[in-house]
Length: 104
Image (tube, rainbow, N blue to C red; front, side, top):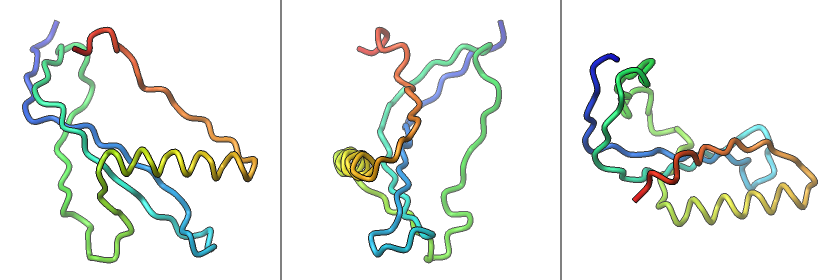
């Protein structure tokens, strides 16, 4: 086993990309919410690659990323799911909810 890591002030970033409301299907809006997780201990053999993301790189004021609260993001996800159901679109959603028995 390799060295373990202790990460503090961790957060989960959830994102939702939806088409713009004005009918122009080529343009999209990205909604983002950060969920504070706190302290994490990661087993060294579970790590493949890690790096720091610089949030300021590439942002020139014209980006279509909107930071929202978790509640707003969940509401937007429900609205997008209803919109897709009405249009008959199917989306393959990946279920990342694993190891829930470890959550306190």
